[in-house]
Every structure is written in structure tokens, then in C-alpha cells.
Image (tube, rainbow, N blue to C red; front, side, top):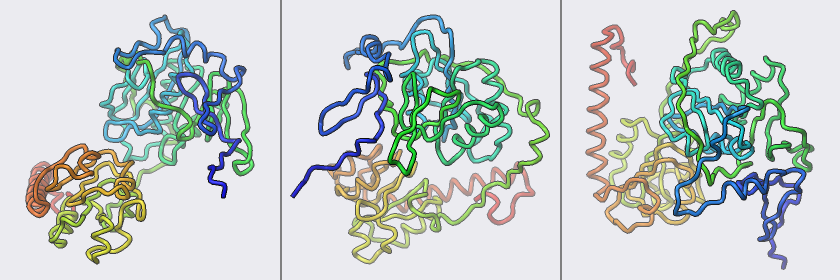
Length: 397
């Protein structure tokens, strides 16, 4: 029986600090030098020991700019955006400046991600749909910095849409779903992923996920730039064509686990299921469960999280009484913040958790429910004092 894993010979290379690379049966393949002319420069400039501080990518006076634009979520950039920023930093030469334009508040380290300048637009909220304002802001930034190329993550939320809108409005050359990139070319799949189409680097690059290794052996300058954008002055007649209808709040229990941003999950250590469900309702969180809790009949099968259940990528995941079997850890590998509540300090899930509470799950559930209910009540009271007209049921949910 042939046990060798089949490898697609048409899959793209990944851009790294050493140039374009891919692994074929344990051997690192190197792209033709015609497609990676600066590979040697990467090796010479950016090789550093792990125990030493990372060097600046360049200290030379900039002669051109690469602009990366993306939305932040709760002050952070997601993996796809970090890969896009790394792509610009990796293909930039010594006289190229990498400018990061963030829609929304950003509290991360732009220098560590490879940016030389950071422009933050906190007036934009990802929950608010304002495509014309964002397009005007991007156009104003392009006019101010005159970048030779603009990079955005090609996602299904705001960034991919913004990149396409800008390319159409500016009549700029564009490449979408880019799976391979270096300083000279981009490539994307065609013919149902059976071939790669390549072209010279366009003005607008919409990068597909996992095309870049975001681990950089250098840092950027990370300079924060005070840059103001007047949304009223940038508005046009087209603004009236788009109206934000807001977000319809729904019961968190109706949200599919794969789409939930906040999940509380119960394991064998949760004995009081009604109390756990009340906590989920108070927090506005979706409910998940371990395989053991599902097999015992405490939760339905659609709530199971793990390799044999659902794979989730919530921003916050709280695990009550879950030991953390390998299968369960596989299901939460993409969660950003994991909080574990367990009596066993040596349980496997504590190694994955960002915060571990060594306590009885039932006691923590009761205390957290009480604290959350008090916080929601205080918030409602404060809001009512500011606007007495908003005291209707559900106004502060």
C-alpha cells in the first residue's frame, strides 16, 4: 500500500525572508532566481540570531512607498492582515517604506509586524458599514503618499471589497486572490486550481490567506503618523446611495458555533447545566461542549467542539471543567483568547489557555453570572441617566 502523501505540483510557493520557498517531500524547493532576484539580499540583510534583538529592515532614506490597508478588530490585526503586511515588508528594498493604514483603533506593535509608518483611523468601526467614507480615506492616503503598490487582504469582510472599490474608482491594475507573490510577480489559481496564472506586480494586490510566512527576522520603524481624515469633507453625492441599517441583535444561542465570537463551553466538570446556560445568556455567549458532555446527554451533538465536532475561531473561549483532550484542543486551535476553569492545574487545557482559573466550575459560574448581571445593570442605569428616553426593554442589550 502506498502511504506517501500526494503533493500538488502546481501549488504556489510561499514568500519568506529567504525568498520564495515550498516543501516537497521534506526538501525545501527554491523558485527560479528570475522570480526572486532579491533572495540573496534577504539572506544577507535579515539573518539574525534568536537571542539578539531583531534589526531594523532598513535605515536608508525612503524613495518609494508600499501601502498596506486593512481593518482592525478590537484593536488587533488578524492573521490574514499580518501576512499581507509581511508580504509588503518582505518584497520591499532598502529604499522602500512600508506604510500601514488601519481602519479602526490599533493597539498592537506596528514595528514588530514590519511597518515603518502607522496611520490609524479610529473613527472607523468594523461594525459600521461606510464603504464610501473608507474609499475616500484610502484615496486621500494614496494621494498623500503616492505608493507604487497597495496591498489588502482578500477577505470576505471589508478589506477585499475596499480593494476592489478602489481599483475600480482609480482605474488601477489589480490582482485578486493572489496565492504567490514576490518583488517581480504575482500568481493566482485558474481553471479550477489546475494551473497558476502570473503577471507583473499590479498597482493593487489582494492577497489570499497563507501565501506569506508572517514571521519576520527584522522590524520596521513603527513610526505613528498623526493624519486626520475629515469624513464630512470627504463625503460625496454617492454617500446617499449607501445607508447603514445597523446590526440586528439576535440570541447568541442561535449563532452557529463556527461563526460565534464569544463561546462558553462545558465539560465533565459542569454539573449544573441550567446555571451554565443562564451564564451564557447573561454574557451573550454561544454555548459549546466537550465530547464527554455531549455523550452524557447534557448537550446536543451540534454543540460538540473538537476534531470530531466543530472547529471554532472565537475571540474569547471560556472552558468550564474541560480537561483538554487532544481532539478538543484541535477544535479550539484558532481561538484568540482561551480561559480555562478547572480544578486540575496540570490539565492539558491549561497549557493552551491564556488564563487559567484553578477553582470549582460551579462556583466560578455562579460568581461570574452575578458579576456580569451587575455590570449589565450598572451599564443600563448609566445609559438611562444620559438618555432617559432609552429605557425601553432591550435598549441596552
